[in-house]
Length: 361
Image 1: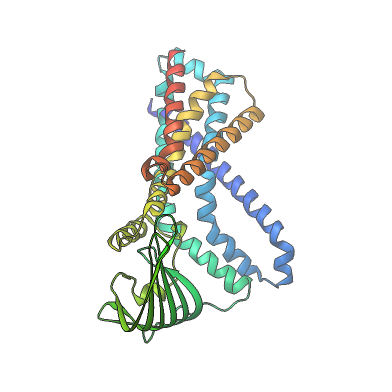
Image 2 (image 1 turned 180 degrees about the vertical axis):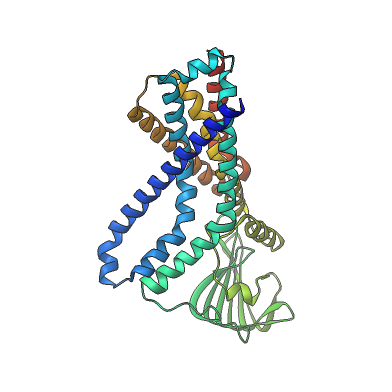
């Protein structure tokens, strides 16, 4: 059995490697040809071109891995069935689930690898890729986040700060407007300040006007020489650094960000959905083995074109469910963990059903 396990695991791993390599080459080639004329006009150097796609590789690998594993599962088991290898294994007393065990182990190891790449490499690589595009390809200056003007910032508690000038060195904001909203996005409070100063871990508005809006539409207006704003827990470092998107944060950064949003009284629902997606998505490779391997035994005479078509269809269903669950999660229609695990749960149930049918043959 050890030789059989090693044979199947090695063969499956080689197929996955070639599939991921092929998908990556196609992905990069299509994207490069799409941008070729624009980049030629900008005199993009070969080094900048190579750096841009090098830092994009982790994202591409994580994205195509589930489909690559699914296609390889279908190819391998279909090939074994057509060549009577599967029949010989069953005749020697090896059950179908036992035959698939090395494939499942490889799928699990690939899932762990994908999780590590996505968490430890991809997040930082995505950020560097955006910087390469901005500076080396688009030819724009790097952003000086310690001295910025005319931008908006969303605080941890959900308020929107419109900033005329931010000076990170003196920890001040000039011409600041802060707006708070309720769950229906109706404005409840607005503060207009000539300056905001950060002292003793608290923002203070100087020469400020405060407006409070009631649910009936009435407004109250007050003037302040100084108005402390302890509800804004964001530090000058938060204003003076680039706010990373969820795709640019690893699991630990996302978890820390969610905790800070909660402590500030904000709503972390969307961030929780992204956190669970980051955690669950890598294990789609393992789930694709659970679906692809037994599915191939139900259509043993299918050719490669049929396997590719089936894999594309299942991949479309999987990613559609992932997007559907993500949307419902962000809107609060589903809990974050349910929304993020929707495609995995559906495909696990499908895989268990297919395994049961394969084992009864």
